[in-house]
Image (cartoon, rainbow, N blue to C red; front, side):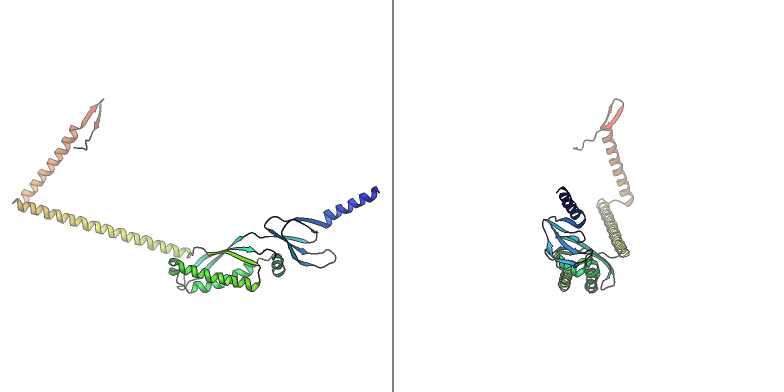
Length: 276
């Protein structure tokens, strides 16, 4: 009897550690079993999927856990030519979600390790984008957000048609075209244009300021001439008058400073009474 019990235990141990495997499915996952028998039996993808609990399977069977949570894929495209032959770069960001209960079809139709977004979707996106970008000027794409929105809507329809045509059990949750950028030399050129424009505007302001200063000097000259004529002064008399006036202002300033100097402890401080 004891030998029988030991034999049963050994059989169970072998089954548990060698023949069978235990698969735990976490929340938001779906399990697809791919049969790969060692000796005999049918192989291939089991069409029944599992989304909760624990599953036991023969160890030769491949257990593929697929996430049902949304996932973001970003496609970067370079050198898309605009209507005016400017090569631009952009990113297309798409948030996908796998359809629950249909992941066995995804694996059976496209393979266990299928990278369908790169091998199938990217070329389709590239062809569509080349067509839409080629029909627009670069300046239009940069300045007109509604034009980019129209391209997004058209591209989204192309992707939905692609998924439907390929019968891919995947939903699109979000879709967006990121900022469109030209190549570096175009950006450098645009920066030079902006800097040149700023330099021109600065020069125009300097010229305007000089013109105002010249106008002010002319007005002062007119005022001086009018005063000289009203006072019946000669030019030399007026120049002498102005010289005396300037000397008086200078003396007044010096006298004010002297009156407000306070000598304390060998130091000299200057107090200015701004109320006067």
